[in-house]
Length: 133
Image: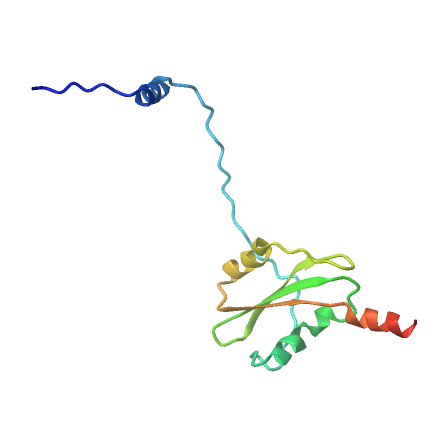
């Protein structure tokens, strides 16, 4: 007794779609390279980050006297020595919106072991304004 195969309607539609050969233009794919560019450098006396205070000491120059919110990341190697510092975002007076890809791009390109991120609160300006009330 032989069994005949009767395709379902869905399968017939799928076969008909595959048989139609449409000309689709080729997609252009960009070949890119990413480069990190050194803007400047700073000297760090201690060489190694051992505490939150050590982290703050190296970043203090970026965060002091800032009139806007800032988001900064610092990459560390296996020995907790700073590799590089990136200013990820300079915000407005009251917000700094940072997407993870902006931070992780530097992390991946630097091949880091650890990451420390910083953002400032404009508390000094708030205290000054409270004194004037």
